[in-house]
Length: 220
Image (cartoon, rainbow, N blue to C red; front, side, top):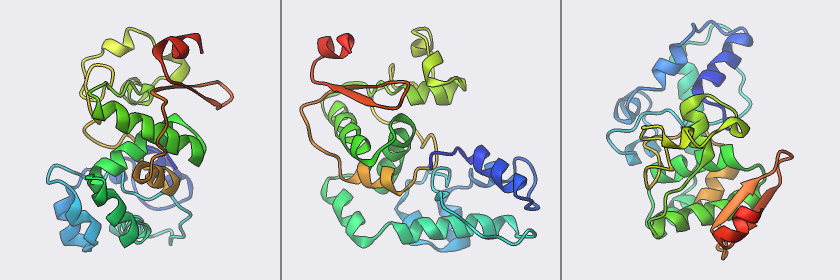
């Protein structure tokens, strides 16, 4: 969970599959419309016209023949995603006025920011709330996505990088998922925990510390 498509590709190559370097990354840039024509999975019709399938390669344990064609690999991952997103889940995010693409982009942030389902649900509530009040999301994981640095290496200068993925400078969600999220992160995105918190930070040990006010957050 949370692998970028390049990391999935590296794992497939390391496992001995016959795909070539960059093949999966290039395939992930196929439009959702074209992917629907190729594979027919209904969730693909829910995605905006600008969407690709990057972020929708569902993380799971897969069994492939070593000579599996690229389309077989991609199709199996997309088919798994299609099975995981149930009608009940669709009803829940639509009831909240969200669409599937927003849900998966948010889930990709949660996957990279915090570890447990409980923390993901609380942070989901915080980030949706920030969007609702017009506050930038200020998610360090998007700066990691831009720079390739580790979270602890992010600097104040990085927060000024001119990029649509910089959630310190831009309000709202980044333009695409920043990873391929797993089911817990997707569920947390759909069903956030509502709290009074507006701030959070993660310790090096992976604990998440929450705060209501900015002063409290700065003390943390």
